[in-house]
Length: 179
Image (cartoon, rainbow, N blue to C red; front, side, top):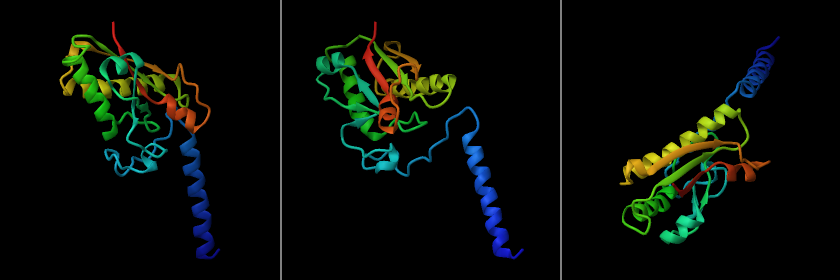
């Protein structure tokens, strides 16, 4: 066998092994981290869709948005990620301001992490909790009273997406008025 045929055969075997390894296991495949995950100008690779100034990883309830005067914003995480981006900071800063010095001062916030249905149930619950915790840490670092932030996960229990567009809506943290 000549060298070029050997390399082609080796490449096919290596490619097959990578494909088989990527399909196995209980954890969903890890997406490559975007080059500029913290940049508001990050391109489509940051979340799988084009970002806009209103794209965020948090979904603030209508009740909080109306009482605090927070503009409407969508809420989506990248696949297999609990990373907040710079577009998340503005709406979360407004939440902190409202719950520390505004109309909801002294009230608590409930953060519910969610995941799309890909991956096993336990993994999605953990990922949802990581997302809620990431938002909670951000709020605490900006002055929210620690006792006023509750985090939980629903994982993929309420997920309704059947394709990337729908799954994107499933990957979020809901920010709601606590008890």
